Image (spheres, rainbow, N blue to C red):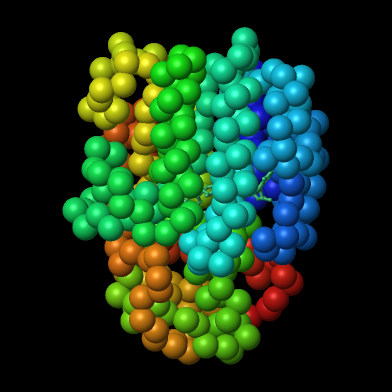
Length: 335
Ligand SMILES: NC(=O)c1ccc[n+]([C@@H]2O[C@H](COP(=O)([O-])OP(=O)(O)OC[C@H]3O[C@@H](n4cnc5c(N)ncnc54)[C@H](O)[C@@H]3O)[C@@H](O)[C@H]2O)c1
């Protein structure tokens, strides 16, 4: 079985590629390895994947329509689309990056999918940010998602709508996974765990937004890739005969959206305490108001994806410990 994983040099794509390789798949990674954050981290992830002979890599920009020809050449059984311009804060300054990498790129993948004879299932990353101004917790797939609070969420919601229309027109099986704050080894340098660890080690202040009153459904990356794998290879997904899900309701074609989180939100302050304990160093906290586009709480209802056998198992204390061990080893730091 052949799977294309886009964003394979990125954080989740790297772990997802390893998961598919461990399960005997042939994996073709596609990534443009852009400089949104430290390129070396991307190169090093790619080098690890390339040490497995079942992994091939294509350095390509998915927003260019030549990608369709390349996908035709590869003829994968599955596509897992994890490439994107991520990050809420960056979207306030550079919205065009999001149109290119999230919308134009996904349209190219859908254009390939509509005429592919080999493709069995297209799985793509969405985000908890699509719940935007919702205050009804926990977030369920059936909740309204028509009130995004920033442009990153708009592009991810657009992906869900694009998939809906292509599933309808061309009977393509699509699954959109709404990820909730993913963390773990090889994590993203623009996310809280990485930023806090770096600052605490340097003795610099950490920025604690919303005066520390944030709650996040932090989800460990191994649990996330377990969910990606289970949903991609789920052979029973043949709507409209699939009665396992209350969502996605009215569609008469193979389209679904699933939350993928831990289902247990944690206080940001408790998360910081875990980092401090693992580093044996106290953080110097700079309390700041809520940032534009942020939401105070994210909490996933994961009952739908659990029907596929998904079961998040990693506690915050274990997950943070694993991250810190990786970080100290990778940057050769002794504490
Ligand atoms: N990490 C999280 O907490 C989180 C939460 C919600 C959703 N997501 C989504 O999950 C997916 C993976 O996120 P991540 O944390 O691994 O991010 P990441 O930035 O580490 O990985 C994304 C990868 O995509 C590549 N890429 C970007 N634009 C591209 C293009 N036009 N062509 C080819 N490659 C391109 C980047 O170089 C990068 O390696 C993204 O779609 C993201 O929006 C992540």
